[in-house]
Length: 149
Length: 149
DNA sequence: ACGAAGTAGTAAAGTATGCTTACCCACATA
DNA sequence: TATGTGGGTAAGCATACTTTACTACTTCGT
Image (cartoon, rainbow over all chains, first blue to last red):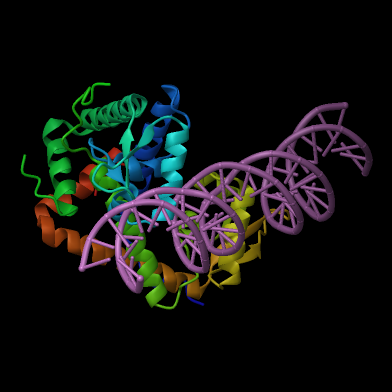
């Protein structure tokens, strides 16, 4: 019945990671909605972050995102309905189609990049350029990237 | 029809924030499941991170978490069914009940703290103690905390 | 002291989302 | 020609909520 069996940690990264992740997501979605791309949802990043400029097959997109083909088909259908991507036949494989961004898709991507840049700028004013650079480098290394500029 | 209308950013924080957030979540849920608390889901953090030792009302928990009372009732019901929390009457208000953690709830909390500590330790081996401390400080400041130890 | 108005908790139902499994067809490759 | 692979439909499921509606209790104004 005794309370306080163990002392809780004074602070841990989750206290920041969770709200920061939410802030990141909401900043992008809100900016997209403001720019007229209100039908883009955060799960559509599975396409936007993995799609190549020359187009990418559904199977490949699904593999990169780590979800099933069927789930990816759904997301592609949604973005295609919104006019953000199109399916074009693959010249090298009659079964395959390549998903490509449309001009509208490119514009939406640019809006999201601007939203991210704005968020990073806000963070930089809080931390200063030196510490913000260090933060970016640290985060990048933690995800296994080289972080070699 | 021209492609490459704007250059995509070489790298941005989302590339790290998203996978790191997922890693954080999965590390806790996996460790809880391994310890026999498989019925705790990540949304239950809404309770665990906001609950006071003396107990907290549903209305207060909902306000802190930024969700509706009804949603909070659901999460409390689930955790109560699992034996992690109980509802006790509030002496000062006949309408109100206080949600309190049980011993099992406290044990689950400790498991999650250990999982977080282990994750932070793994990150520290990648970055070294100095840069890890700087990362923690930066993240903490970004969420509006003082970060004054 | 007393009725009106507000607040705490809750049940029930509905909605949006992000998936999965089970199948199936078309085409490619051996 | 058999087998595999790409794309797809249909259905189902778990999750994380919200809206609506109601009861019990408290507080406030008179």
